[in-house]
Structure formats: structure tokens, C-alpha cells
Image (cartoon, helix red, strand yellow):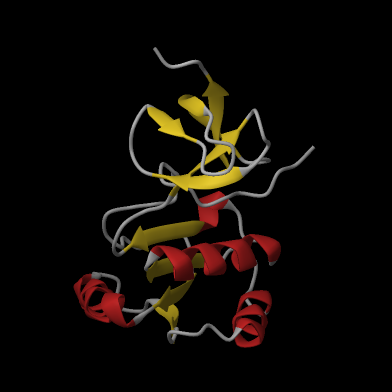
Length: 165
């Protein structure tokens, strides 16, 4: 059974800075206003003179139809770079995996805080959490220990209920 990649706070696609993959011929860069300066700097600093890239700046409200058209029109082997805040990056990441991009073909730079989710084993609800090893479920108020791995099926870290002292 194949599970599509999911963007999460410890994802291997998240990098600190944009770094172009020289093994790929085509590059698609999707970014928002906060990342515009860094994207331009990365493009000018790149040593390859004939870098085949297509920039796409997203506005506050992403036009999903335009994004889908752009992603589905890419040639096989295109490397995708996402430089944005968490909400935009998660939307673009989900659409890209739907269009057939793999985790090896995506590089993500997040501007601002990353989001973290937990899946409660008591009420089967996923909720956003802050950093920490022990949290309380937002729906059923159960105390949970945050598991060590991320479930791509449940789209969150597994939360193991416990009784507090």
C-alpha cells in the first residue's frame, strides 16, 4: 500500500535554505512574498549559467486551479522548490504529491513557525500541538505522550494516552 508523502515538522524535504539540485534539468520554484528576496539571492548565487527554472509567486489566497495547472504541466523529473509559510507550503505540497511529485523531487523552506500534529488513540482525533513530550488532547482532554514517529496515514504523531500523577 502506497501512502502519499505528507509535510510535517520533521519532514526530510524541509531545508534551511534553497539549494538547487544540479542533477535535475528543470526547476519549478513556488514562493510567497516573504521568500522573494531569498529566492532571488539563491538564483543569482547559483553557479550554473543555464539554469532552466520557472518561478511562480503565490499570493495570500492560492488559486488552486492555477496551481494544479502549473504542477500537472511539468515534465517528469522537474525539481520543485517551495519557499513559503506553513499554510501555503502544506497546500502546495499536497497538490504537488497529488500531481505525482515524490519527496525526492521536492525541497521546502518554511518561513515562520512549523506546525505539529498529534493523533489521539483515545478519541481518534488529530489536533495541533506545541513542542513537548506530553500534551493534552484538544477534543477529549486525555493526557498523551507524543510517540517517536509520524504516521502518514493519520497525518500526525501517535499520541499514547496515560494517567497523570
